[in-house]
Image: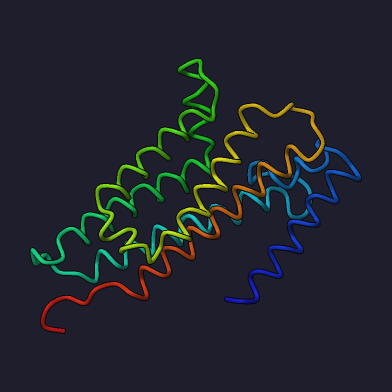
Length: 197
């Protein structure tokens, strides 16, 4: 997986260059929804959606691998909730659910995402012995939280036409989703085995 870092760094630099050289209107082709007419249209959304689906799938594999013994029941519930949250986020990413919810409720579209983020924090706090494992995953979770917080702040408060605003928001999201995928992969690799295996 080491090769993914240089690819993401080069991709990050490319998007910043596109916004600097050609502006937001041109960059929007690559960070908007999936349907479009130019090559690689919506590539950022496509990549983040795939990573969110894979994150949900890793957690589902953890859930499915465990039987229902009481000793691992909290693991199963945690993995099931993680599967559902990240599957929802993948659907949200693809179908712009938070934008639609924000429009219907008359609120900024970052607030529905913030609600999901708070739900995730609640799950991590309640199942901290599973989700954080005594600090084993604390660094990953802190980085993910920092990236998502920065994304929400930029989305809610940065000038809509500010230089690098669009690239920053979408790249922060992509990096956060990438580290979420790595977090789910860590769980899959270290998942507890059912009794009797």
